[in-house]
Image (cartoon, rainbow, N blue to C red; front, side, top):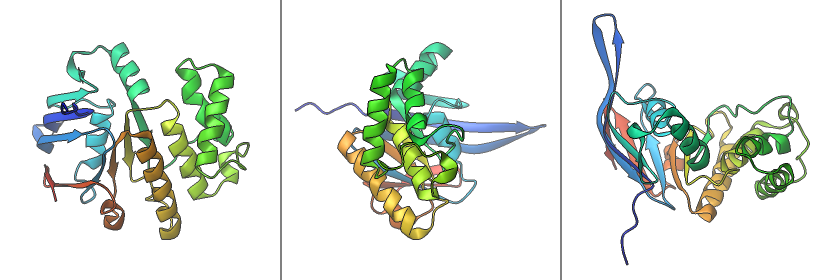
Length: 228
């Protein structure tokens, strides 16, 4: 049986910032792969560059050097329109802060990315309702974020990230603002949905208990990345 190509390959990534005459290196020679169905933890101290790496892989920032390939496409050769399509159709994002649209209901928040992608409104509504029901929020479809608990808001954010059937999920401290019990519950739901969808996930976290539940752990420290 032929070996599947990774969903994501990052090779020798480097990120630097210029501050006057000084060059600040965030990280260098970072390489990693992510396969379908694989959940990988990204850990390391604050300021190590975890969020920067996720933004780069998520096509929201560009490396100073190195190459990224997503779903077989080399990112550096794509124009802005192609990058936008690749990001919209292939990558889902979950952040520490849910960033839900306050004026819309939970259902509408999960419909929005589908509508932007051109999905029919009735189909988008059906998909949103199904995802929210799977996240245990079938009874909260029409509540706005202000009427949801922190855990419920983050579950809506996860459903939104999965709405367009991404192949890759990137999560930056997705349970960082939740109490330990709620954090465990939300993370278990996230793992369950990712496993069932068979997508690849890279999840940045400070919680080593959560990290140990994933398939691999990558540690980012001192501008370098290593697996433990």
